[in-house]
Figure 1 (cartoon, rainbow, N blue to C red):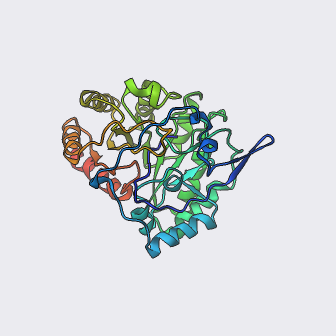
Figure 2: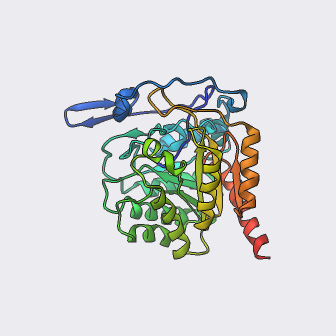
Figure 3: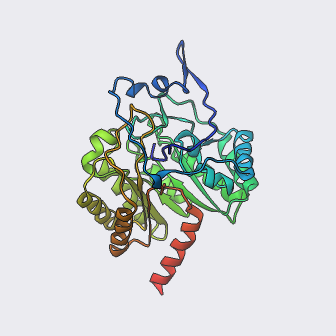
Length: 339
């Protein structure tokens, strides 16, 4: 799963996990060892106390409750809930939610991610229509659509992404669409072409961390494949905005973060997000340190100096946090650059 929206201490998010039948065994996704069977054998990592700049308010607003109702009514999964995003209260109160398509079970087992791992169900052919209906009811000007990894499908779910984009375009032609995709690692090149041909406004795929940490943090992925994926998006459609993000606090060095920035600019990526990694359970990758707001500000300044059109670098930055406002600023930055 290409998302790292992980829980803050004071976040309260209502999540409805379901049971999953695997052969004769009924798996309860509320139980950590069953939600993450691939992590059950791992030693516990201490979860350090979060600093004041990480804490957020619990969601209580009428807008939050209405967004929750619409998600349940349309039987939709959101990464905000599945990964316990610390910004869920703020975003949902404004009617903003990141739709997670292709189910709630991922075929990967990244050590930072709280999405359930296992064998997913078959794709729901009615899901694109339900997403489009929810986008219309929420009145979204900008929507973010992400997914689990689906290594069990030949095209990695590319056609399902394309169908969802087209359904939203048909129902809400004025809504701009941002997608946060898997890496399509085991797919033919046509998979990526299928998604790009559906014309999302922003193509996002997170590199997640520095290459040296991939074997431990993101063992099922390949750093240079992900980088090349984003580069190919620009080759197929030079006008399409590209976006990527990383977490910090996993054990990376500052010089490594700057190298990732340089790699991204070599791939002509427009928008960079950097946020603090937060550990969802003791079985997940440990938080090595909490990066200070001043350090984030330094990363942002350096990234703009390297030529990114848009940068969001704060402790609570997540891939789709303030995505609509940031997209407007991204377009303005391109227009200014073009004169």
